[in-house]
Every structure is written in structure tokens, then in C-alpha cells.
Image (cartoon, rainbow, N blue to C red; front, side):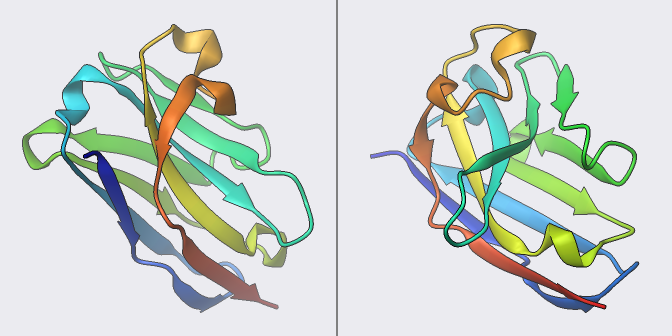
Length: 125
């Protein structure tokens, strides 16, 4: 059974930083595309960043230059380094794992069939 477990969320002041991790079990993460999404209560889930099998990245415009996605295949773990945080970044952040269908589909939620439970990030002004 594939399981994804996020960690590293918390409360931080604006312009601060956080590092999220997502540990994958039950699957070899290096065989899949993996990504981060976020959701604000009452709103649609939004893509943050995705990374394919060979390390190609696709990042949402809203976080480009501030957030960096990376993966450590040896540890079966996905990361999201978040810097210059803004109050509007406040959300629950989810990691996702799915078939590698090309760079253009990294930010499409339908690409991913496995999701974590989420970790809350709260940014205060």
C-alpha cells in the first residue's frame, strides 16, 4: 500500500522560511512523478511544484523564485523549500505521487493517484 507522509509544516512570520518533507512508503519514488499541492479551506486545490523522473521541475508562477522542489530517491523522500513566505501562502500542503506523463502534466492534479494527509503552513504578517 502506497503511503505518503508530510512533515515540516508550522507557523512562521512573513518573509520566513520552512522546509517540508514527504516520505514515501510502499513504492519506489524514483519511478514516479511527485509534486506538492496546496489547499485553502473552501477553495480549490492548487499546484505548487512538481518534479519528474529525471529531475525536471515545473513550478507555479505564484511561488517561482521562492519555493524549490527537490527529491532524494535514495531516501524515497520529496522536499519543498519555502522561503520569503507571504500570508497568502497559508494553506494545507499535500504531496502527491503519480505516473510520469511528461513535464507539462506535472502541475495537473489528475496526474497523481496517491496523496498524503497534508501539513498545515500558517504565515502571519
